[in-house]
Amino acid sequence: MALQQYPAFLVLCSFLAFRALRRVLGRLPLPQHVARDETRTWRWRNLSVSMVHSLLTGTGALLCVFQTSEILTDITGAYSGSAHLLICLTSGYFILDTVDIILSGQSKASWEFLLHHILVAPPFVYAAITRHYLAGAVISLFVEVNSVFLHTRLLLKLSNAQDSVLYRANKYINLLTFICFRLGAQLYLTNFMMHKIIQQQQAGTFLLTQSSLVDPLLLFSLCSVDIMILIYLYRLVRADFFPWSKDHLKQNASSHHNNKKFVSD
Image (spheres, rainbow, N blue to C red):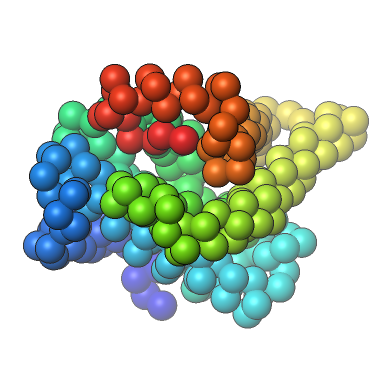
């Protein structure tokens, strides 16, 4: 495909496409409970765009692996045209969402999302531009399978539907996909990168090359996101399965005083 010779252009197209999608979704009617609050309205629309991104990229990542199985084994060099398009799509989305959070004045309330994007957007853009670690970027998009259920959970909470059958069913699927697709994929990539760096050092090939400069930065990003995932897993289990715990009751009390926080338990 000729356009794949211009990955920066594809990233820009993705940015503009998700921006247009946000405007379209912004015209849709909101639940009455959400529409009464400006912050909840922004959260709902932001999550709606994120949901579309997760549905596209989560499904796309699985299809890429099904079509090109080498992605799971050749994390550094495996390539396919569909994988490249997928990473360009995601890069544009992460840039848009970062800009949206900052310009909407939600940086403080959404600092966890913002930190996540700052950590993962550069590796995705790097993979899109250089086609290096493209397979690793595709594997990292397995997390979007879980994000579908994670966003569903947050949308239901915004609608005050925590007591619904849908929320109760979703919390089990969310936890299962969180462990398998989010935590599992992330630890798989972290383990690969750690072994790669150690093997290069032992072989004496860890010289001043592009790989020697990029790999430690990628490992730092992976480890940082690992920590965030483990923290959020703890908070998720505590909130959905042990809501009577003292820590969660304290969190609920504080959330009443700070209802502008985007990522609540």
